[in-house]
Structure formats: C-alpha cells, structure tokens
Image 1 (tube, rainbow, N blue to C red):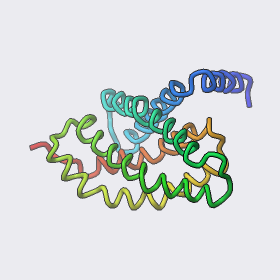
Image 2 (image 1 turned 120 degrees about the horizontal axis):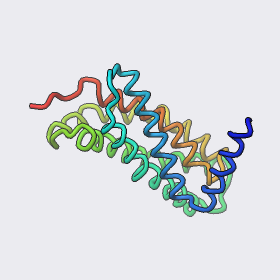
Image 3 (image 1 turned 180 degrees about the horizontal axis):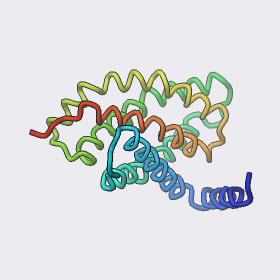
Length: 185
C-alpha cells in the first residue's frame, strides 16, 4: 500500500474510532454517490444528473449509514457473547427477514418519490410491480454478503463492508428503478 493510501486509511480508522456514526454516515453517502455515478454512466445518461446524485448521497448519509450502524449494534446486543456458525446463520436470517425487505422497500419509495419526484400512486404501482422480484433477487445475493460480514468482519468494519457491497447493489436498484421508468401523466 502506498504511503498516501496508508495515511488515509490510518486517518479513516481514527475517525471511525472517535466518531463511528458520523464516519459511517459519510462513508455510506460517498459510496452511494459513487454507485449512482456508475449507474448513470451505465444507463447512458448523457449529462450528469447532479440533483439525483446528491439525493442518492443524502440517502446514504442520512439513512443507510446510520441504519447500518444501529442494526449491527442491535445484532451484537441480541447475540452478545454468542459465536459460531449457528449464531452467524441466525444473524443472517434475522437480517434477511427484517431489514432486507424494509431497506429495499424504503429505497424504492425514496427513489420514486424523492429522487424522481413521482406521485404517490405511480410510485406505489411501480413498487407493487417490481418489489417482489427485487426482494427475491436480494435473498439470492445478500445472505452470502451477510454471512461474510458476520463471520469475518469486526464490528467496526461491518457498515463499511456492507456499504461497499451496497454500492454495487444500489447500481442494480438504480438501473431497475430507471428501467421502464414511469411516465408522468
């Protein structure tokens, strides 16, 4: 690792230790922004949609980072002192049955209502149509991520790891949200 990268990582770890919630929120916002930049590029957007980018970053900063921070703290409380594969499986199952459906639903609603500015009825119709497929796809992908996260990541790095993988997932959700975009009446 280069000296610059090592120094940046050292400073990041200091901030993560001193201000965990703030650091995780900023990290999630930056990664969400990166994923949106990539999604815009892949989807063929000719000119950067700055408003969309900033709203996606806001989602990461105000929701994803803090949600992940508190989710992993709660999981640690629920499973305090318990280790092993059975505990990891229980954590993954609990996460997949609770936060996964909520997070996908919430992102779809946020994207339609806030990012795209669509009316409630149109967003509701799109969510009813696309949500089952998105959630089923999530259940094929996220349990593996959850297993790796709970099995190998120390608590302080779980949101960072999750946010990094979520940035890839967000590209999928962004592209899914934009595919067959609802035409305003």
